[in-house]
Every structure is written in structure tokens, then in C-alpha cells.
Image 1 (cartoon, rainbow, N blue to C red):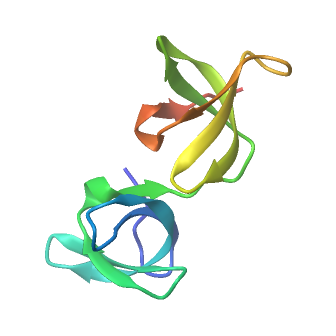
Image 2: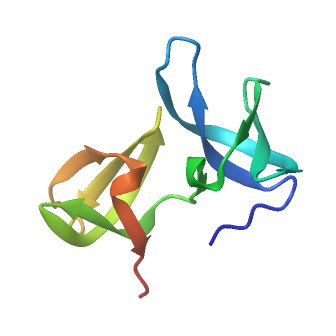
Length: 108
């Protein structure tokens, strides 16, 4: 469950005219029917369904991320819809992941 109240910062799936897209920074402007109007940082607005929204993270953030199996990881950076994650703490393997590969926050 996400907090999708107006003015809330989110990551939203921004689709371009050529069909490509990526998760980008956006603010929710309001709910319209079953969708949510999002304004991206570049000023473009789109109405999106809930499954096209993700919470915006404060980095670094501990998560569970899929790397063969789901393992504890730290999101170090978010860039162009990809996440740079480190597995196993300092000095562990680092790889790029999609936001869909992140399961949940790890407490502690």
C-alpha cells in the first residue's frame, strides 16, 4: 500500500511516445477515477494506474532484492529507472536491478 495523497513524491512509470519507459520522479496531483494524475519532474503529466507507481526512496535503503533468490541488499543509487544495489553489506557484490525486483524494506 502506497501513500498516494496529492503532492506526495513518488516514482512513476513514464512512457515515452516511442513506447519505451522508465520509473521517474513525479508528484501525485490527484486521483481521477481508477487512476492517479502524476506530474513528472520534466513537467509532463500522465494518468497512471496504481501498479505504475512506486514509493520514492531515501538512499541508502535496506531492501530485499532478487539475486537468484531474494536477499538483503542496500539500494545505493536510483538512476533512469534502475537501482544500483549492494548485497551483503560493505564490499559485497554490486549490480543494477529493476524496481520490480525489490520486495520490501528490511527492518533492523
